Picture 1 (tube, rainbow, N blue to C red):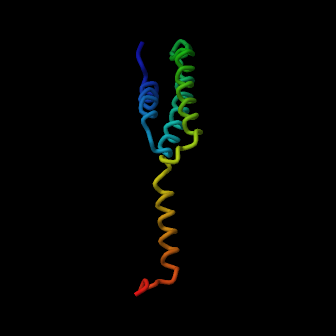
Picture 2 (picture 1 turned 30 degrees about the vertical axis):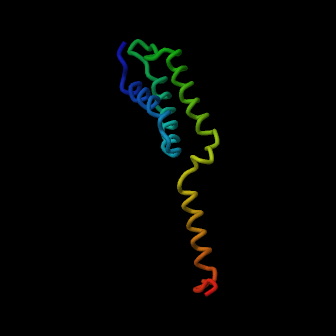
Picture 3 (picture 1 turned 90 degrees about the horizontal axis):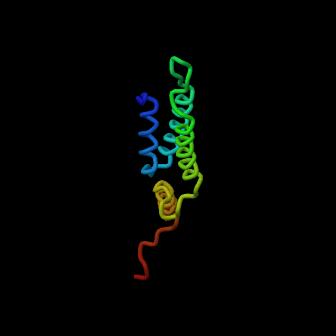
Length: 107
């Protein structure tokens, strides 16, 4: 049995996705995987038979749903995006800049 380009790409994507830490990229991976699965399900041989078994399509679908569940899970506090903490630092810096500056601290 020969694998076609769409199935190869889907397999690679499903293999790489669990290691992806960037949420935005993971969303893209899931979206792309769903599109590839749809293409794969629509492909047929010249005889009109599906080029991939229903069991294999179901297996791919389950893997995609597992990735989707991972996206839906809340991000642990220690893994929150760095952007948030940087925004907090910026707001702290602005608050410090707006507060009156004491040049001498008790001298």
